Image (tube, rainbow, N blue to C red; front, side):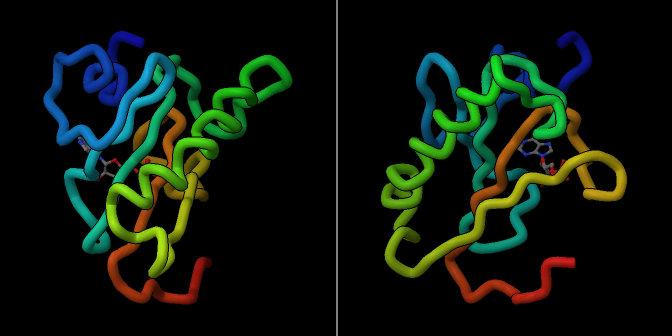
Length: 114
Ligand code: AMP
């Protein structure tokens, strides 16, 4: 997608602090971290949000979740715990319309989600 900031990161037009990548996903550090560890994991295919997942695209979500435990180990937060969040649309607080999962940890997180 031409104007998508995460597509630009994926194709190398915008630099990132990469944590993990394979042929289908990229994980990189959030530019504005909200916790000591704040990483985003995104599919390389442009999918607008989790609301756009369907029978044929949901395998990418399964792939992302299969990679998160290893990434969390690499980041040193697997034992202490962490949170995985995806924001969807305006009310969900989604700023970048390219599916992404926040991995947050490195301190005790607030319990409030709403
Ligand atoms: P969301 O509000 O769920 O759409 O989250 C978008 C996230 O992308 C925010 O936490 C931003 O700090 C992060 N972000 C935006 N631009 C960049 C960038 N160039 N590199 C890394 N993270 C970014």
